Picture 1 (cartoon, rainbow, N blue to C red):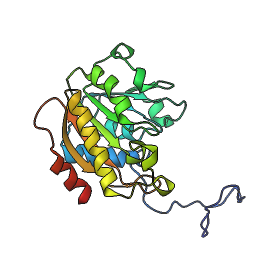
Picture 2 (picture 1 turned 90 degrees about the vertical axis):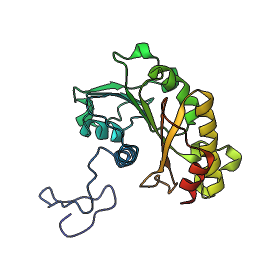
Picture 3 (picture 1 turned 30 degrees about the vertical axis):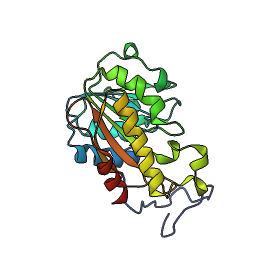
Amino acid sequence: MQDAIADKPGKVFDENVEIHLVGQVHPFASRGGLKLEHALEQFKIDVEDKIALDIGSSTGGFTDCLLQKGAAKVYAVDVGYGQLDWKLRKDERVICLDRTNARNLKREDLDDDPQLVVVDVSFISLRLIFPALFEILKQQGDLVALVKPQFEVGKEEIENKGIIKDPVKRTNVLLRLHKFISEKSWVLRQLTESPIQGQKGNREYLIHCNHTGASLDEEDIRKVVVD
């Protein structure tokens, strides 16, 4: 504001004050879009003209990324209400499904068969979300999910301030997910670390699942965490 940094809410300025934004401007509705963009590039997933399902859409970082990459339509699903960025909410390519619990989502709730599902949820394990999503995809298409170790470990494993620093715990989270996915007759194809950390500093990971190709093995998973 003018030549001073305004970093506290409630400060009063003259109505004619000059406002300057400093720092990098995110290309998406939220920083989450950067995580998905990284995954799509690493996993070589083309979303052009595809119908996608965004689980845990929140303000719409993933949805925005999908649209900018050419998705034909995105179903933005969130258990909350009114969080989706206005520019996305009014976009005719976006179907906003607020107040919708993904655990109870069914194919009949959608007008189309999604070819890609992306997931970014908090305060719940992916193992509780995946069964419904696997059923919706019906062995077709791809699933990309953000893995947040702090929501996958047991309460007894939570470290100070909810940050999972122990690489062994993070590895075990991914190994348990790998086992769960395999038991559901799906394949954990690819894994990469998120290019940016969670808000509290947790290291996060992105996984790619589908029904074709070879699955990662335990050594592949351990290498990603150690590296």
